Structures are given as C-alpha cells and as structure tokens.
Image 1 (spheres, rainbow, N blue to C red):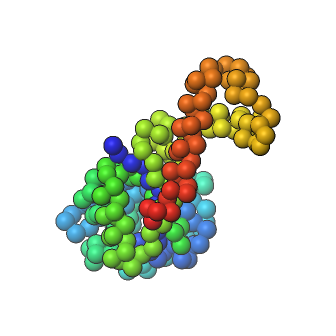
Image 2: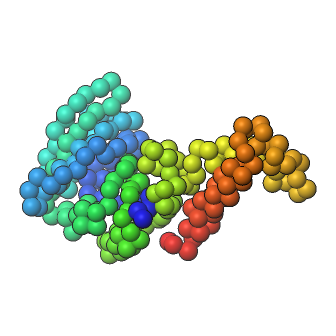
Image 3: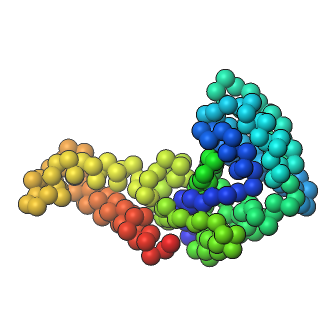
Length: 222
C-alpha cells in the first residue's frame, strides 16, 4: 500500500536566487527532463519582489536559463532550466527513480517542503538516504497510509485524519467525552451527529490511531 508523507529539507539547486527575496514562496507546477543532463522546473512565485528575483535568477550559477511564462498581479509562473552540473545535488532524479509522486512542493530561501506519495517505505528510505548523502537535512513531518487521507490526496488533510474522524474527535472533545470523569456518553454524541454509536466508535478509534501514527509514532521513523 502506498504511503503519503510530508518531508522538509533544504538546499536544492535554484534555491540560491531566493536569498535575494526571503519572503518569496515557490510552488511547483511541473518538472521534466529536457535533455539527459538538464531539468526544467515550472513553478509559481509569489510574496516578494519579482524583478529582484529575476535578477538573482540570472546570476545564480545553478540556473542555466529562465523564462517568464505567465504574469498575474500577485504571482508569476516561471520555467527554469537547471545547470547540468546540479544533478549530483538534486533530489528529482531520485524521485523519478523511486516512482515517488509529488503532490505538493513549496520552496523558500530556507526550506523545501514536499508532500508526496511513496510506493513503499523503501522509496521513502531512499529519499532520506539521498538527502543525507548530500549533507541535507531530512525531517519527516507526517506519514500515513493512503487510505487514511481524503480525496485531495492529503494536501488539506492533517495527520491522516479524515474529515468525519476529525468531526467526531472534536465533538467528543468539546462535549467532555475524554475528560476524567466523562461528562457525556458516546450515545449522546452519536445522536447529536446523527450516526450510530458503532459508527461513532469506529471513527473515534481510527481517528485516534491515525493521530498517534502521525505524531508520536513518527519519532521512531525519523
């Protein structure tokens, strides 16, 4: 079964230009290989001075060239070709090799945050090892089975908790179900939500399991 994971790391080729615009945020749109040794990255940029960023791109030794594709009032779409000598430091060849699917990727001057679908734990370990071989940080923020996330693939889900599980947990918390002693019964919460006690019990158990897997249990994975 595939896994959904959130990873935070640093220092990727093309990130140097962001030092000139520390409030700029890049969000990946597409990445592809134009030639055997060159990768083209397409991304949206927002949050800082575009002219200063473009000047920094022109001076970045990791950038072979760039193109402004779309210009909107608050963001711009760029296509950047990375220099061929950046491959030994880049992570995208590992992503392709391990069949890792990028669901969301953002980059700032300091950090790169990746939400991805990993076909196996071995693929996740390969990415972790690639980061360490490149003297990069690797922080696994979340990891959960794909079946645990909503239809958005996990972009909006947190800790692998589905929306029904989240609603059940919050209702139970607000009603004092987790207090000692309990201030309400499961049947009362189920009636309020319009579900059976069996359905509510299942949502609470699975929600708590997912929370534990993607918070405390992560300490043994990293």
